Image (cartoon, rainbow, N blue to C red; front, side):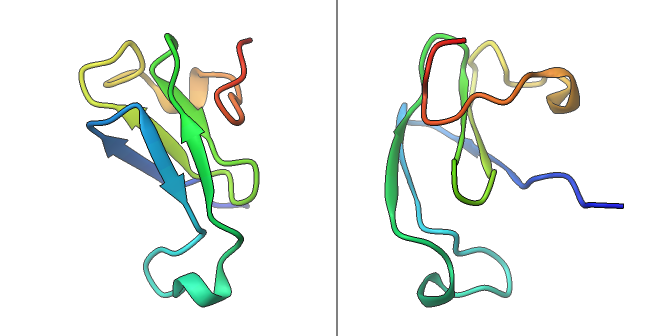
Length: 76
């Protein structure tokens, strides 16, 4: 079974992701990308699938498994 993607709660709509997280340094991640959280309240990194959820936004507190993929802030 594949582990679910990491969810990171953030307080700003513009976020950066470089693939670094527990046990993986940025040098072994992916190129740094900047993502914009839109009205859905979350965005998924197109490289590593990490989900960024805006604190207090519509997706905060929702079951993340029920939300569709939302890459790079694109509208669904």
